[in-house]
Amino acid sequence: MRTIQFREALNEAMSEEMRRDPNVFLIGEEVAEYDGAYKVSKGMLAEFGEKRVVDTPISELGFTAISVGAAMNGLRPIVEYMTWNFAVLASDQIINHAAKMLQMSGGQFNIPIVFRGGNGSAGQLAATHSQSYEAFYSNIPGLKVITPSNPYDAKGLLKAAIRDNDPVLFMESERMYGDKGEVPDGEYLLPIGVAHVAREGKDVTIVSFGKMMKIALEASEELAKEGVDAEVIDLRTIRPWDKATVLNSVKKTNRLVVVDENWPIGSVASEIAYRVQKDAFDYLDAPVLRVNQADTPLPFTPTLIDASLPSVVRVVKAVKEVMYLVA
Figure 1 (cartoon, helix red, strand yellow):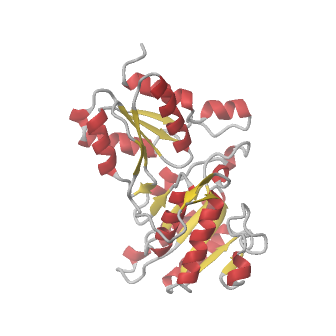
Figure 2: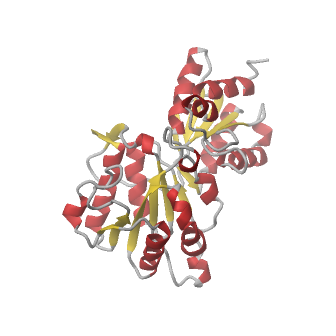
């Protein structure tokens, strides 16, 4: 099995699907001549030409609207945003048109479209460029939301998203494009809505997704040194999320900590905590704890960024609390 970068896995997924289906095209800022802001689309203009790899003006609302119309007419657009922070300008088209069109048209129009780009904190980018949008968009019926944590998942899930007949939001991270991981040579797809048990354990369940999986897994290794055997679940898909895998794990471990880069109010972690206490209350030996970003716009100063975001130290502390290992 090869070892490739996260950005290369995304590139392969898009290129393979464009070779397979002439209705698939890529559109966004700097995706063509510049090979993508993060080089995700490197070489694609040369292979597929300017009609299928389309550079746009700096107008997220405009090119998103064009893409939704294209999807209504049978094409399968992949819309790249430099960052999901910029896509706030396109949220009207995503929420009020892409998400609702199937219902509003009485089933006449599917919207087979993928919206993808960088999401969450990415260093010193300041408050307006450092937000996580999984919780925001997973609140909208009609949308599917995916946040992969590694190159293998990124490729398999992006291929599945491109073939899906519903609008899919694919949330990546600028900080993960250079990450390396094993990816098979042959074609494969991963099912949307199925979580992955990244580490098996018996004492406590840790649930996370995206780049926070690095924090969760590192915390599990630190806990193992102290004799705590944590099971770590990678959600992969935020909407629909895999309730069965999480509930089955909690029924085994009897404890749950959710690590989530979203703000705490109305977060992905909030939904998971609610569902677990509703459907597995009798199995819980401790209250569910969440490790979220602080309830404040992300600061610019590195020390304050570190204090705001989930960390290994905070996850370890939360696990010890649910296991009653701290006073």
